[in-house]
Image 1: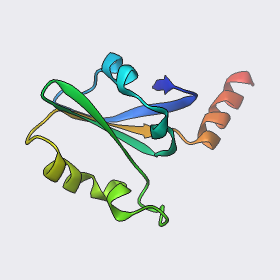
Image 2 (image 1 turned 30 degrees about the vertical axis):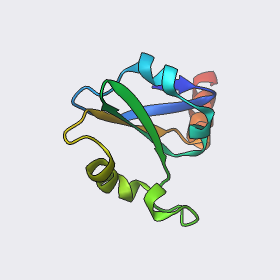
Image 3 (image 1 turned 120 degrees about the vertical axis):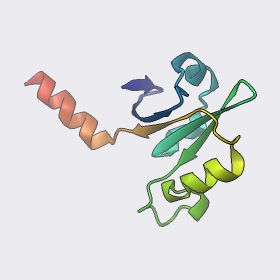
Image 4 (image 1 turned 90 degrees about the horizontal axis):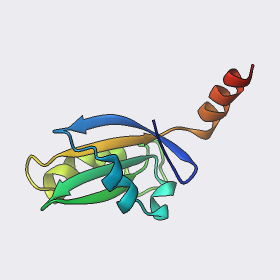
Length: 103
């Protein structure tokens, strides 16, 4: 689990060892707090972060939903680049876990 700016994230995919916590902490911007998923991809030794919403979020544009991820990786990332996907833990799940710990 990764905690940053009051949110907790779970690493759900680490393709070609793309995950680097220190680089993530340095590049993270509070604009990313609103997204359900954060994808980090590497190109030219630089980490780029992009946020995605859950597919069921119908108010978000198609290209901002997780279903667009494969297309994003193919169109906008270097071929075969290392990348990772973080999933934001839902507030209600986090509260339930904290309650169980206190019981």
